[in-house]
Each structure stands twice: as C-alpha cells, then as structure tokens.
Amino acid sequence: EENALTSLGVALGNLSVDVRMAKSVIFGLLLGVGGSLATLSVIGGSKDPFILPRPDQRRAAEQAKARCSAGSDSDHITLLNAVNGFEAAKRRGGAAQRFCGDNFLAYNSMQLLLDLKRTVAREVQSCGLPDPFKGGFVSRNEGNIGLIQAALIAGLYPNVVRRNMGEVNWSTALNRKTKIHVSSVNSIRGGLAGKCQRAEEWLVYGECVKGPSSFAMRNTTRLSSVLPILVCCGTFDMKPFELEPGVEDPAWCVVSVDAWVEYKVRREEGEALRKMRGKLEESFWRLVEGKEIDQSGLTDVVNALKRGSV
Image (cartoon, rainbow, N blue to C red; front, side):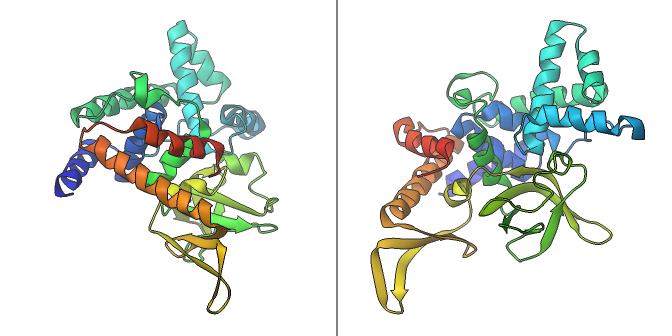
C-alpha cells in the first residue's frame, strides 16, 4: 500500500495540471478514454479559447459554441470537440484559421492547448504510464461520453451538485445553492438554465465562483446517470432497508456515498455496485504501480458505466 501511494504521488506530482484533473487522466487511461482526459486536463488551467463577441455577433457565437457541444450538455465535451476539430483542421493545411473564425475561437489559444496536451502526454509517460494518444488499451473507448464523465467525476469529486424536478438552482453536499455561470454552454443552450424537467439531475463542475448575488459554476457537465458517482467517488456504504424500525426487507438495501448520495436499490444491485467499486479500485492501483490489469474483470465495470446502469 505504501508503494502504491508513493507511485500515485509521483504521478500526480509529475503532471503539470491541476491535481484533480491529473487523477482524472489516470482514470481515463484505465477506462480507455486516456486521450480525451489528457486533452481536458490542460483546458481547465488555460484561458477560455472562445472569443468574447461583439454584441451584434453574440447570437452567432452562442450558436457556434452550441454546435461544438454536439448536444452533450457539457462544457468539457464542447472544449474537447473544439480542440479535436482544430487539430483536424490543421492537418488539412490552411483550414485552422477558418475553423477558428467560424467557431469564435482564438487561434493562439487553440495552438497553446495543442502544445500543452503534447506536454502532458510526455509527462504521463515519464511516470511509467502509457502514452494517452498512442491507441490500444488506453484508447479503446475514445468518444464514449459515459466513460469520459466517469473519469471526470473520479477526479473532480466532490465538485458535484444535484437538483430535483421543478427546481432551478443546484445544491451542493452542504446544501449551498448555486447556478450555472453565464459563460457555460449549459447556460447558452437554455435547457439546464431553466427548471429541472427530470426526476433529478446531477452536474459535475470545475470551479464555483462567488458573484454579486450568488455562486456560479464554470466548466459544467451534466451526468447521464448517477452511476459514476456510486462507482467512482467517495466512501461507499450499503445497509439493510428497513420497512419499519427493526424490520428489514431482505430484497432491498440502501446504498450511499458519503452519506449524501443515497438510493434504495435491490440487494443484488447493491452487491454489484460494491463489487464494481472493488474491481475499479484494484485496477486503478495496479495501473499506477505498473502492474498487469485483469482486463476481463474490468470489462464489467466499463460496460456498466457505458450503459449508465448496473
């Protein structure tokens, strides 16, 4: 255990990105979306590449950002798509400037992001971990939104909020009320800025800033399901479900993360969650230590995160 912690400390310390995103990069390698998380790791600490438009161009700029989001309800995916699109345009020769103009992106900022992601790739390899952009095991699931979300929340937790049907504001674990920042694609697109239309919604965010009248979240991503939190985050607990004090229902149990995220599930589902968490944690430490990973056991976890259900 001591060697594993030392290896993790070296890996997190060697990456020139926020330590939370460094952890997300390692989870990205494990889940097969290493390139996406290596790219996202450099975005949070860099200047927003989207240009502040003139008033008469604001609608066109909002439409461009919405196009980059591809309906993902995610600033992270929006920026990832922008970087990938810019890189593809550069390969076509002479198309990168037009790509930036069409999408209200600053060319120099985009070029810097490309340079930084190559730096992160070298730093990842210097820790004894695989190159996130070389394909194979660490890239086997590139493009899967559910797995990108899981790797993000694994590093950014407890930066997560929830709201229930009919609510406008979001609540943290400490019940602080917050809103989505106006710069977010989730504010521009409108859906998440209005009232919640689902039974509940979960959002992971990069940072929460205090405004004149309220707190607001930057770099937000709506989670497709609560499963990544139950599998990848915090301290997990499973206890019997009581029909009344002292009377347990053997078919059901209550699972929770940090005594905040709490659900009643069938007992077999609770056991499956506990098993998945154990396999993911074991695989994480084996990757950090440079040991062989039982890919067959990890596949069940990955498939569940892809589906968003146990």
